[in-house]
Length: 590
Image (cartoon, rainbow, N blue to C red):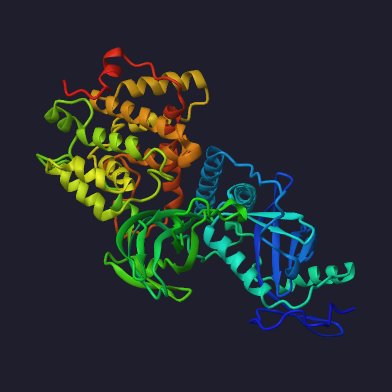
C-alpha cells in the first residue's frame, strides 16, 4: 500500500522525498529534531518530524540485540488542522521547573565523568573501565537533556487537544514556529492517514531523519571539536535593511553542555531604521561552538500580549548565527563579521580570550585607584569597612535593579563599565550622577569587574584550598563548623564586605519570581569572581602556548567555587561577632 497519492501541498523546497511502493510520493521531510514533550506533567524524549503536510511525533524504541533503529508513532496533526492558538477555555500550561541546583549537580557529574574518561584513555586502561564510565556519562547527559529545556511551544489540533514541547532556545523555538507557519500557507488539503499508512510513514523516518543521534557527547565523533572555553567579547555595532522605523534590541545566545541560553541583551534603540548600538559584551564560554543573535521589536503596549505559550509580546524581526571556529579565533585581534537575517544585516566584532589570559589576577602595583588594588588598602585609605565602590553599586542596584530580569547574569555594555571604572579609579565627583544615568546591568558589571580584578580573591589565596575542602565534607555538622570558622578567619575588610554583599544577594533572590535570579544563579555568577585564586595558586597551566583542552577540569573547579558561595547563601544566619556585623552599616568610621 502506498501513502496518499494525492498531492497535499503546493510549492516548497524539497528536503527529503518519501518513496513508497506503488509510486512516487510528494510528502517531504522539512525538519526533524529530538525534543522534550510534556505529557501530563512528565518530560518525555521524542523525535519530531515536520513533513510538508503534517507534524509527526515519534518515540525512539530501545535497540535490542543489535537491531536497527525503530520508531513508534505517538501522534500526528495535519498542518491544515494545526494551530498555535488554543480555545479560550484551554488550561494554562504548567511547566514543572527543575531546580538550578539539580541541573548544576548533573553538570558537575558530567564534567567529572568526561575528565575520568580522558584520564583512563591516556593511561590506556582496559575498555571495560571506559565502557562503565561512558554508561554513567550517557545516563547523566540523558537526564540533563530531559530536565534542562524550559521554553514551551504548544500546538493544538482541530478538536482543541494540545501537545507541548520544551525547548532550550528562543532561537530554535522561533525556527520551529516559522517553518510550520510558512508550510501551512502552502497546504491545500488535509492529510488523514490509515493506521497502516501511519505505520509505514513512521518506519520511513529511520531513513529520512537528518538528526541521527540524541545530542549526547557519547554520540560525538572522536575528532569533533570540544568547543571554546574562555571569554568572547562581542561588539554589536549596527543593523541595516529595515523597511520601517522600529524600537529594536538584540539578544545573544551561546551553547553550553549541548544547550543554548541567553547571555546578553543590547539596549532598545528607539524608532529607527538604522539602529547603531555600538555596545560591547563579555560572554562566558563553556565548551561553546555557536553564537546566535536575535533581533527583536520592543512592544511597549502592555495590553498587547502574545498568547502563544505565554511568551514576551516582543516580536522577533530576524535571527542568525555564526560558528565559533577555534582556529580563526585564536588571534588576539578583533574580527569583523556580518550576520544576515531575514533581510536585515547586523554588524558585529568578536574577540576570543582563553581562560588563562582572561582570568589572571594581577599583583597590585597601583598606589591609587580602587581596581586591582588590595581591598585592605582601599578601605584603610577611605576610612571605611566596605569599599565605596561596593556600597555605591549595591545602593544603585537596590534602588532600581532588583526587578531587572537577569540582573548580574545579563552582560552590561563594556564601554559603560569602563567609563565607571575610570570614574571610580579617579575619584570622579560626579560618579553617582553617572550611575543614575546608566543601564543598571552596566553597574552590576562594574561591581563584578571590581571583584574580578582584585589582586587576591575576597576569600583569600591562603584559605581557598580549605574552603574547597570544607564544602566536600559529608557530615553536615562538621561542614558547618568548618565553613563558618574559615569565614570568620577572613581579614576584617574581606569578611565585612562579603557579609554586606551576601545580604544584598539574598534580597535579590527574594524577588526571584520577577528577576529570575535564584540563590543558585547568583552563586554561579559570583562564585568564581569571589573565590578564584591568584595565578600562582591556580591549576591553570603556566605555558600559554598549550592548547586549551582543559574545559572539564575548569568546570569542576568553577563548580566547587559556586558550591562554596551557595552554601553561605543558603545559611539562614551567620553568627558573627557583633562588632563585625554592626560594621556592615554605611559607616565611614574605621
